[in-house]
Length: 160
Image 1 (cartoon, rainbow, N blue to C red):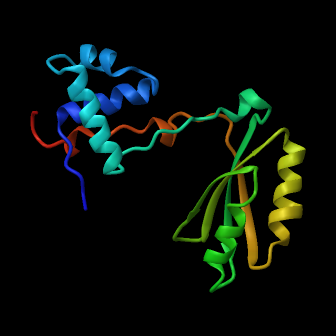
Image 2: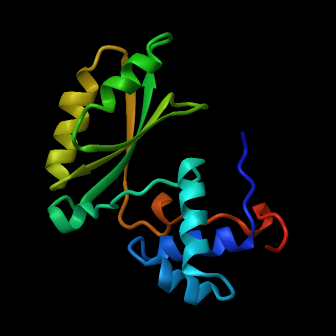
C-alpha cells in the first residue's frame, strides 16, 4: 500500500527532519493554519502507516569513530543473503544492502582509525565464507545522509 501525503504532511515531516524533538505546538505554529491537535493526529497516522520511524541518529565521529568507509563486496553465487545477514551482525557495520552490478553487497563501516578499518576489511570481512572480493572507499565527508532525506515535492498530493 502506498500512503498518500499532502503538502501539510510534507511540511510536518520536513520540520521533524530538521529537529526530531520539535513539539507539535511548534510544528503547528511553523506550518500555520493547523492546530497542535491536527499535527498530533497526522503524526500518529503517518507513524501507524510506517511513513517514518522515530529514531536517534548517532554521529560516529563524536563517539570516537571518525573513519567511515563504503565497502562493496562480491559474493559467491547463492550466498548473498547469508553473507548480508552475517555482515549485519558486526558492530562497526552501520549499513548493509544487497545491490546489483559488479558487487553483490554494499556496506558502510565505521572505525577509530585507518588501521582498524584495514584490519576489519582484511581480517574479518575477507575471511567470511562466500566473500570473493572487497572494494573499499574512504568517505572523507558526507554531503547528504539518508537520515536527512526529504520527501520530494512531486510526491505530495495537491493542497491540503
